Amino acid sequence: MAIKTRKEERRRRIKMSIRKRISGTPERPRLTVFRSNMQIYAQIVDDTKGINLVTASSMEKDFPKDKMTKVEQAKAVGKAIAQKAVEAGITQVVFDRNGYLYHGRVKALADAAREGGLIF
Image (cartoon, rainbow, N blue to C red):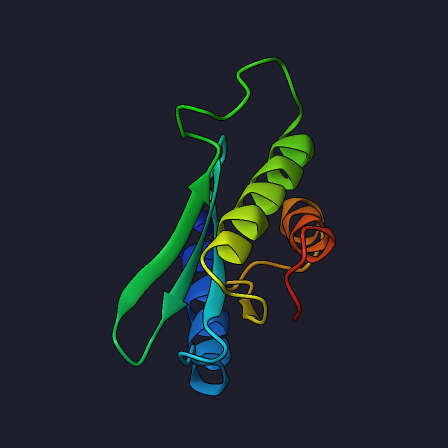
């Protein structure tokens, strides 16, 4: 089995164990993070209806295009998702790290979202 396949399988198993316990409700939707090699994405999901309530990513048109590190990108996305969520009337969320370790970019996004007004 290739290394990439093993890493993906490990993350998938971790993700499934997290998703067994975490679910987004209308009162407390789920804030989920996806991290690629170059970009980072965040979305707030209501799992009972199966819809995205708010999304933010480093690929959006209004995202700053100046040179920044990936951690700085994650902080900017965290602030953006928090701002959009507060505008939509969402203050409490459940954080879903999506199988990624809670450090680096994932932690930076979560901390910036907390500073922006989200409670989790």
